[in-house]
Amino acid sequence: MSIPLSFLFHALAMVIGLVLLLNAASISTKKKTNQWLQKHRITAILGVLSVITGAVTMIVFKESQGYPHLKSPHAIGGLVTVIAVVTTPILGYLITRGKQNVKKYHTSLAKITLILVAITIILGFIRLWEIVSK
Ligand code: HEM
Ligand code: HEM
Image (cartoon, rainbow, N blue to C red; front, side, top):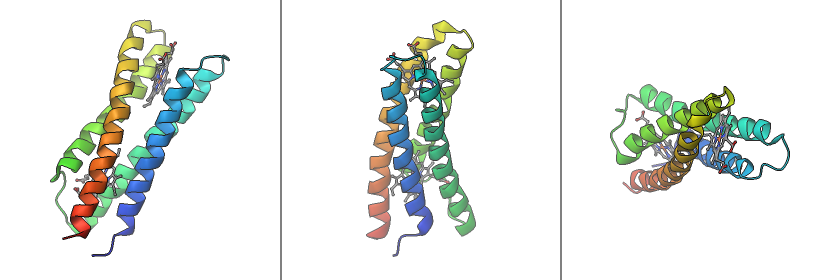
């Protein structure tokens, strides 16, 4: 089977998302200037938007083909990952609104989120391999 363009776009958006999120995390550990938060925030939001775009592309593609949703470990893991990717910046935003006690949760969830994104990408490539080698 030839690989649909939506699959390639989905994969590319997720890899770009991971690179941006890793960058955001890296910026947050180098707080030399007071511009770090602005850079951290924008890079993180772009990463989150990339992951959301990738997920929506796949959902719309499946819908257009009449394929069932959430039928593979990658798809279910992907949903959990998307939830983590959306929750982490909400916690980050709460810190900027003065909720200092949220900092430890944002930091911990951010690390878990990065690991989930990396694992989901690996599962995604395995899933793609499974589909094309059928
Ligand atoms: C953070 C990274 C990723 C997330 C959050 C993610 C999320 C998802 C979700 C939620 C679905 C199911 C959509 C539905 O059932 O309507 C899906 C399907 C799929 N993804 Fe990903 N994905 C990621 C990375 C990748 C990568 C790198 C590939 C590699 C090509 C990939 C390949 C696929 C394929 C082939 C499907 C359709 C088949 C299936 O549902 O099992 N994904 N993904
Ligand atoms: C998924 C997206 C995000 C990731 C992966 C992420 C990652 C991180 C990490 C790893 C830290 C800990 C830094 C350290 O070790 O000191 C951190 C801290 C922080 N992040 Fe995020 N972040 C994200 C989104 C955001 C957003 C959108 C905002 C703001 C609206 C934000 C605001 C903050 C703040 C205020 C801190 C506390 C830094 C400090 O004072 O020590 N983050 N973030």
